[in-house]
Length: 243
Image (cartoon, rainbow, N blue to C red; front, side):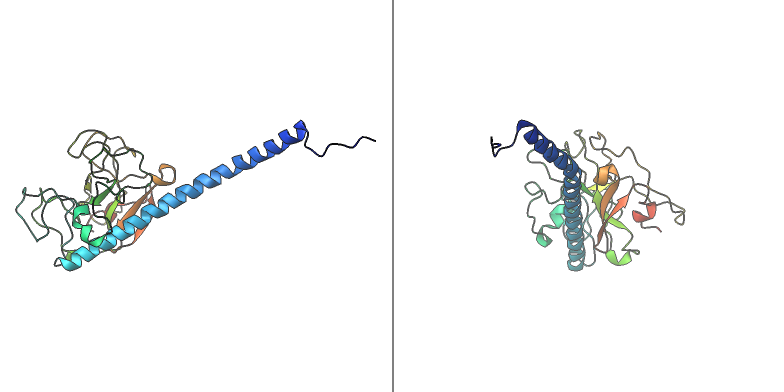
């Protein structure tokens, strides 16, 4: 009686390979989701620590929040005489991030456009009603004069500019716009903005809903916490100080 060889037949091998391929195909969406969740968590963690650093800065500087752009570290300066500092420069002493041109700490892990060499690594933008542009405004904002600190966005995911603009290609500006300070502060209006895309060519850096398949944006709030918000659930009151 012939004994069957102790080996797989070609058909058996093909069946095993097919089963393995099927299992991999079933696992891939879960792996992609897990990676996306990890990137989202990393982004929120960066936002949270940046917001804590802003609060620490205010404690050390007479309750004044850092500027988003321009100015120096010592109180007010005349309008139009900013020295080109970004809010990331103000936070160097409070973060384990010494240089925003070599560290990607201020880049969202979901960012898709790589900044050019020597350019600031930045895909988060500040709320310009809290961290002002000192080339336009004469005075930084006093934390003590701001209410609803758990509701107002301090900084958030922002669109990246692919044009030269004022900031250079593939880079988010230091403050997001448009600004929302409506006359009727009691109406809960969702923010309106241009398309939810990167690769914009204007100088407006809008809130960018880049997480969870282009449906949520991560934001840090003035009280230091960070959270994800879906499109349509970020309201003007979350950016405005007039409410």
